[in-house]
Image (tube, rainbow, N blue to C red):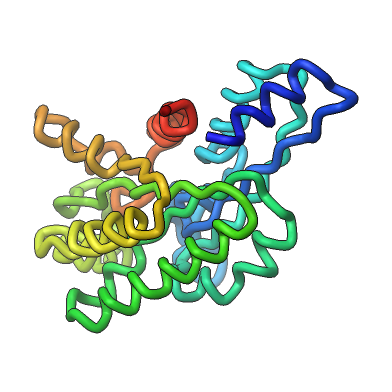
Length: 242
């Protein structure tokens, strides 16, 4: 990818090379959300730790490889967001920073809307808008998200929390997420955008007998801090692909 040339130039010439900017557009996983808890108003809230999310983990990996390079991270993830809203805030949250590379990851919230053709079509159309606009600014990678819960864990005791888990589990069993991601990957390919298929890696773990629900910090849809390394490493591999 062209970003490698820019990293190389800055590493070799600190004064002559430009700093590198990488943006991340997505939902709660991109935002850096982990466990759920009840706040003082008894509403469900999430733990926010952007430093432990995959965007900062990728930045730290790149800084290890290119210690002289200033890497600016624009985290445009918003908890609960979907690709249609992401398209609406694209200029404000991403494009005005002129990123060299933008990583886009949507699907977890989108797939909860159902699998009617018009809903998947709207998702794909909004994603196409996002990818095409980003390509005018720099390089783009579409990254598929993690698996969500495949059962309701007995460790979830809060009734409201369990209801959320039940609805997510039902959507997973119906194949909602996979249908959306197939549409997303086809859209990315038609836009000539690289795909970093992390969802496929989660499915391989499941096929190998791994309890993927236990790899979710909230036991619903937020990967543990350690599993964010899988995203970062997968993105690093995608960046270095020929």
